[in-house]
Amino acid sequence: MTDSEPTVVLFRVWRAAPKTVIALFPYELGTMDPATCQSYEHMGQHGPANPVLVIGATRPATPEEYADLRRELERPPYGYRLTVRQRTPHDDAEVRAAKLRRMREAARHAV
Image (cartoon, rainbow, N blue to C red; front, side, top):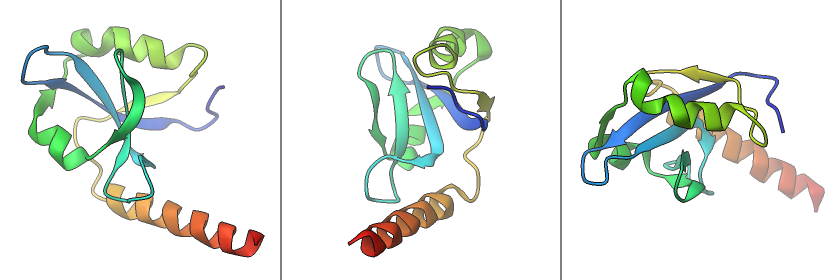
């Protein structure tokens, strides 16, 4: 899979041991709850995350710290085109909520 559009990502390092890097995708739904976004770690791979809680328990990762994880996400099978941000976009929750509304509307029309 390759993305044709760039995907916004925040790379963060857990403050508690082990100090591993997590990638947060603030515009991607994590679950059917718009308070969650998609995340990725070497261990555990893709899964939902609450960005507010994760940011509270992490610090921004340096380019050196997230280089391996970024390479993993940009090559097959993921093939993301990443746009790295240092801060959570101000509209992230609204974008996730709008995606959820569109999904629910499409499901309602499909029945």
